[in-house]
Image (cartoon, rainbow, N blue to C red; front, side, top):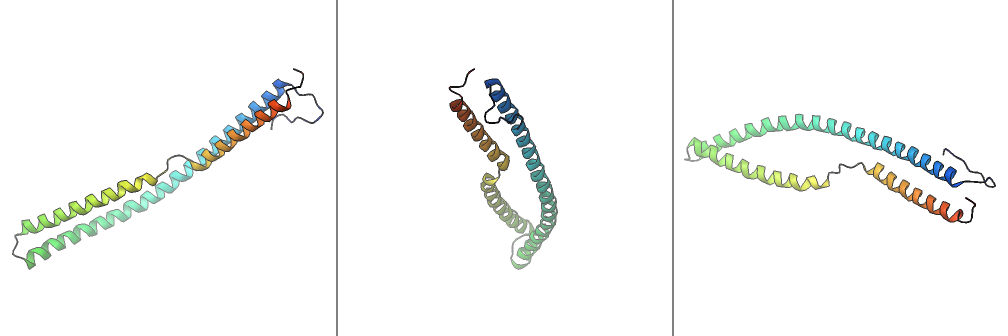
Length: 146
């Protein structure tokens, strides 16, 4: 804290307010630093996740395409359907499955938080502390000379 008031020393309102303003400024600067660090940490985690996700999805996509081609020829060889109909059946199935997966993904996005939670909680605590400090200062100095 910038100003340390000792019992027995006369305190003025301006010194008290100046100390509170300095403390609040310092506190919010620290909270901004915490938020920056938290966001940077989240971005680094997201980059690593996305890199591995893209690699995994690309490999899986190649496998799925090959599997779909296999199913097309499986239908074509075991039925009397023409090749174009076999492709149509597999394409329609892929569209339905893809639509269901996109609906599931849409529901999952509700769980993503873009606001840094630790910094938000710390700011709330700071505001509560500041409010209680001001109230205590006001009630303690009601009879002090100005």
